[in-house]
Image 1: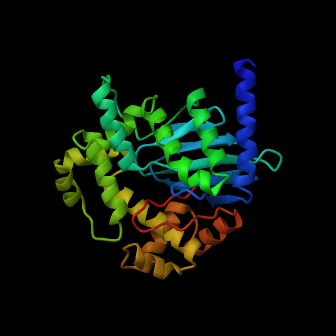
Image 2 (image 1 turned 135 degrees about the horizontal axis):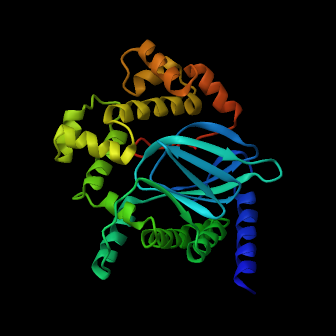
Length: 315
């Protein structure tokens, strides 16, 4: 069997498995923490999303991500990696005949950090400018690991016993590939990128609190000016705009997932004024809170429950 036939059969096997693991549109939780399956039977317009640090492998269909003036395509040939929690815009290309089928793997930062230490002890890495979001070709080794993960996830016992080891292998493949420097930099708090990554995690853990730039800059060990510049370099936005965006995404999730009113959701994410929340929400999403919640439900973009200690993902 030549390499092209092998890739074709491997790709078809992944599509078949995801067709079973993701039977309904939206997101389906797997039996293994940190892994979700994604399915869309029709194209979805460009919309605001918030992804947690993770790896997204699309086995069929196509997605495009837009961050600033950059566009990232992730499909059966390319996978997406985010080294930090990041808001951006996403577009889905799919049809009933060829639905989008993908798997999203949250990066366990503790496991990734352990691998980084091992890699740094055994290898010499050429300094590379880190980035927060990239798409890159899916090679044979990573593709093989993803296929084995999907196969394991069809069985509860295989999932629990084999799944964590395969996830660790996937992290390793990513950390030693083109995306590796960005992930390693995000975990190395001594670097400027790593300090901003730590600030982003602080925002996601305490978004409802009264955070300000001075506090975040002090915790990062930077002047306010340096913090602003480095923050925008990683996220393409300012710290306060990022905090506002995070709050709006969290509020949208609460309205869609838990059925909260706009006023209750606004209070939960740190807004003191419901009218201010409604104005900023409409300015950001292009619809009122009620209109947006109804629209997202009509598109069947269902979001799983997330504990308060995790980043929230809307895909």
